[in-house]
Length: 253
Image: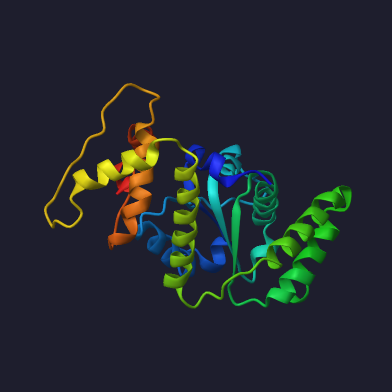
């Protein structure tokens, strides 16, 4: 398993959300996404509903690869979606090869049904078996991924606040590991914290200036990750010019 500490600073997202849109997009997943963002946890959520016959875009797989965590909301119709299952296979692959953390959330489903592909999950996989006789290996990879994710410790979707706290604490733990492995970073973090005057209620702007490649973004991320739990709401913008051009001002807001 790859060392998470060695790759944290290369990741673009803290969390990737995998979910079945028709089940949870406008309820549980929407509330979870909002709660994660309010805590400054940089979260990827796919806003597009794929039509039947469409494949998952390479950008979606890249987003999974570039995330520290994947949160998988396993709902009743999750296994009926080939695209959700392809996402899940990729997530398990990243868990094994990149050390990605995976948190399953069992939304109105029995974890044992997911693990053993029984009930509605069994029915969905049986239908995939019939429709994919020419590609049985793909269906088996879906079954294996469901079993592996269901064997991980997960959450019932009762307290979103607790789920967010669990993810935030694990992210902070990863940050601590990064700091220990970066010579001189801890001292620079302390200097920035001192200049921020966190005990003050005043509004403050602090700039980090220097030539490219010396670790300005790394330092900003480290400080942000260390102090964000002290604030009710917070947000970290990286590559804001690129994101503004791609997503527009409304999405960034």
